[in-house]
Length: 157
Length: 200
Image (cartoon, rainbow over all chains, first blue to last red; front, side, top):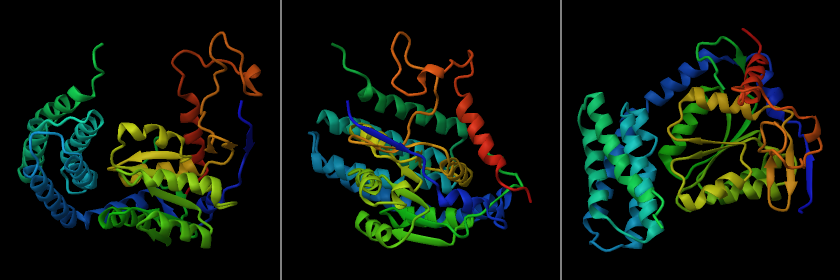
């Protein structure tokens, strides 16, 4: 059994939050959202740049598993997560999360599936570039989740 | 946690020293925009763990937003270092871990690094504020052991597993929650913390 010691620390933050003055919750949230709205053009630009980088990497990959290529794709996709929500395209975040899940599965199993990766990249472009109706975007995302989950399912004995 | 975004209750981050670690310039900008919107003024912006260590060694940090830094997960190592090596008071700093995606191989690192809470991107400002308030709760035990240093991860005390002898000192007093009230502790705690903010 390992030795353990507990303490109950006093946090300066607890007192600071209660210091008179400060901001009402509603005002602070509005200010933070307004700050984020200013970033919308930057986020759209970044998502396009990342997509182009991912497509370039993908085009350079063959049909066999390539450790460096899969890692590079993962690094590119993971940087985009969170940007879609700021530019009003939250479905891009879901698609990128699905792509990262897929690439993680492929990396874990040292396996490559160009079609599964390709469909994610095409979806990324579709979701970022067009005004898809909400149910259309949902259908795309449901398809992507199925593709990435195929590799996440436990192997049958 | 359920904070009402239209609430007029006040909170104050003006005097808090906030550490931000994110390797991507845009990720850092997003964090900065959120925390400055919430009223924080003193920010230590770090693009890598070395810069974050220097910031911790030369400042008292009241709150930290640490990105996991996927795919390497260096952010988890940094939080472990903060908990084990930074010394008081910074080792107790509330840490909100941010992550875009957690590879399966890093789930246990995320769980064991000692962060107060992990939030997944994208995170709206209301979520960030809820987590700040939740992390600032006093009275949560902090554990030092060979294998884990950080806030006690056990939120609910419903007694030891059925048929087993409890290991907590207080286990013998625990009474199971009624059916359907499994989350009562967390919900009640969050509500209590929210009510500490003074109304405008």
